Length: 370
Image (cartoon, rainbow, N blue to C red; front, side, top):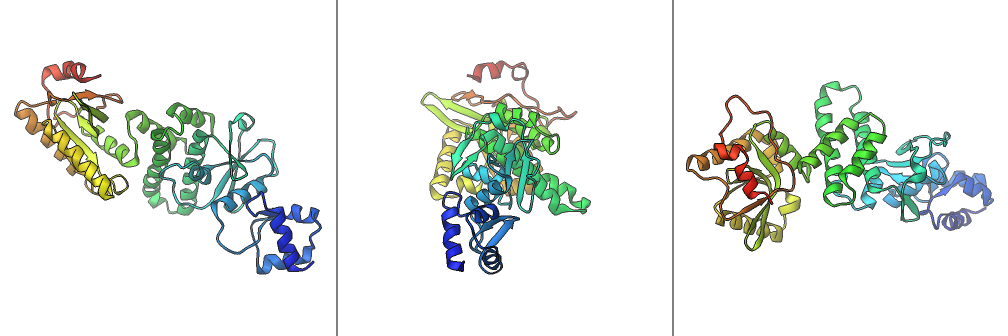
């Protein structure tokens, strides 16, 4: 068999498989083993044993996915980071590797190279979706598996450098938060669905996923918002996350955080959400509308906040203290509509400010909540 004949055979066999062929496919089609060995040495690649791609270029996501399923065997379902990108999720880490789910009885399929194989007892009942000739796991399963894949990859890269454990925890948490919060905010899956998958799975790395779920419950819609909420909980003042402000004409703005009873809010301005001229103009218009009603709105970038969180907390509480000292509180022309519960961390012995008694008893909250 000539090399060009083998290439044509591989193209035909891989037509519906992203161009991927297996050693078993070639044997069944009568390919000459010597010609196959020559192709692997000169033109083809074998990402995992017995699975071939007839070129030497970097593999695409579709090719990687087909390699993983060909390795795991018929019935394998794509999940993890590649599946997250296929579903259009935001904040998917750019890490190598493909993950597939197989039934627990599939003992011969095991992880190899960048192909991760997970056994899933619920696989027969999972509602899958078609993608490029493959099956995708449901979004909640994909989110959880992608989070575990991130943690496994980061942990493997750390090796024995335990002194960098804090860096690992922060990096993993930020990436896992992005997966969970993005999917929930975009309504690709519900928070309850994600939690159900976490509870049904392994304990390892579940703490990161549970923490990200708690962030979503608190109202965070992005990793920087979750970090801001964490920070404000340490200040010990009551605040809302993603609070809607309405006037008689409708919605004025949705603030990332708002210090209850003070008229002071905070916004995280990321490059992704505010980078274009149109987005920046929308941000400025929203700021003007909020200020026109007598509220104060402070802005910070995620990078600056991570550099000096205490400085931004002080700016917020100083603004609240100033307004309360002048007898000001929630702007009278705005109606506060909470999306999520009122948050407050442990109250310090000497809080930055104290709300008037009616505010503490909830009179203001009752008037403003929709």
